[in-house]
Image (cartoon, rainbow, N blue to C red):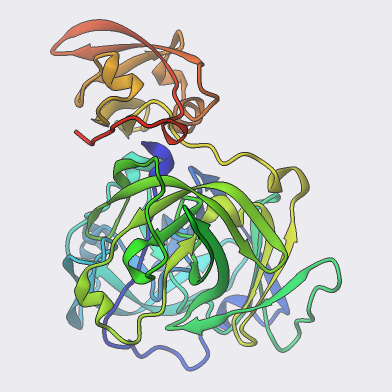
Length: 418
């Protein structure tokens, strides 16, 4: 289901040597620059001038330590040299994947200066991000680009300001200031949560703009984190290494600073035991864009602080999720053809007889070539009881289907991924 989509980039590998003060080159000597972004399916997507002439799309990811190219054919085509092959831990926190290092690649954002950056190149593209987002995604901008700067994310106006910390002043009384901890270039914040009968659980969460979800907990990182009564098992997203397996449920509340969210839809994922044996591992979960977008967010990396200002109507917006049971991918040159990648058992879509591999050609009476993937998935996240009509093609035959959306997390129904 689309609302489960996330990219969680925990890259564990030997330290890459880069410029002594990365980030200052992109400011072009200014106190700050303003870089526009597209906000698509819960991802912040930047336009990047790659190697001085090739326009690409990169996800801006505070949960990634380093910058990454997902498609090796790009760097092969440009004839870039690889200096080393390394192993990474995939985002499922168990699989091992491989990448190459290429040095001193010229990158440029809109309104930024050109800067040289060592990047990682995945040996194989394992993410399916194009199909999951309905747009071309070529790479990830990680914190090695901006780790020495102050990063101001304005979700309302769709731009990021990168500030030179030497000239930056805290934003004042309209913002709430919280301490964070920077580990391997990634920001962590202390929070309190309640799951089931366990109240006031103190946890450490990664601030992850590369995750298109609300909130994720690693169930086996804390003795008081249990699964809620009602859950949906299956894929909770995708990332480096493949699909992320886990559950979707609701927690009683999540609190950081003075901010509290109640009855919040939450993803649950277990970590591989070998990761838990790593004494340097400090994360109990993450905060994704579906929470972070409710704020004007400033991350001061040098001072290890964040500043938050809530966005009025956005702050109290319900946490919606897909209530159909469908996992839909977009394909085609313009990502305007849609097929069902998976169906969860005992959900409305399953009971209606929809199957993996069905191509959707009409949705709520409209030909899908006129619809975006985001329009379809947001419709499937609306209130329970809403009737969904669609026409699919299966083995060359057109089939009409109809079902009503259902709130799985408020009911005791058995659901299983197909």
